Image (cartoon, rainbow, N blue to C red; front, side, top):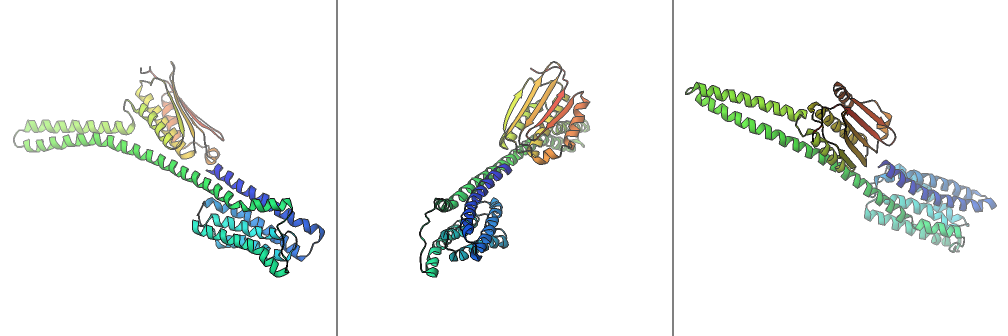
Length: 386
């Protein structure tokens, strides 16, 4: 997003700078021959108009119809342009070009207004531009013809296309903002789906066992006065079922399921893909050791969380390579943010993961630069699963 806006802003500022540079050059041309008070006022007003136009471009990040900034900024943009328009009526050289600063200012303001108001502002600006030669005719009883200089002709032609240039640039910026918003929504939806999956698994475990416990407890209550041994048997069964439910819940929360590593790898790919990153997944046969399973699954989960929180990744890679010595998990991504590069102090998640892997005789290494982040977890394993 930052890079796209920088490019969009740079293009708009560049075009304005080129047009304003041509204006200043043409304004200085008659000043070299004859410098008077009118020429001095025009140059001062033109410089002020150029400065406020360039600064006003930063407010365009709000996008089409994004709303005007503070009134003071808009007035600072309009007042120098209006002054140049008025004083230009008393200058005989290149008279038509003195209406262009007001036209360019109106183009910038129109981008931030709703559609109907945008058309009204552009129409008003066009009317004021065309009014300039009429007012000049009334004041001097003579008209100025369309300029013969090629430079001024080109300047007027480019200035006439300015609304199209600005509106198309901001239209593209709005598309990028919308795509980024949908990318974030897709990531949030993937997280919500994962939570629903976890809730469904927890419901399956707890719902079944609690229903059986409730049934056996009710039977035991009824049999207490009839058959004490049968009641005792049902109470014993209830205790065993509660213990089994507790163990399965702990297994679910801790990630001790036999397929947890496979699930974490697939979930990581789905979540990263939903967040807008192309994820490449390469997996060798999985290790048999459940401790290695859990450690690698936690590494995948932590790496995926870091990618979502600390990067704008468009490309990610997850590789699980098995060898005779053990397993190596490598997770890498691009789009590392400046904050992540500036703050390379490992967080609590990575610190805890490093301790867990070190307890198995392995090691965890992270590499970060201006473009890529890579996490490598090496864990010795006892055999591999086919």
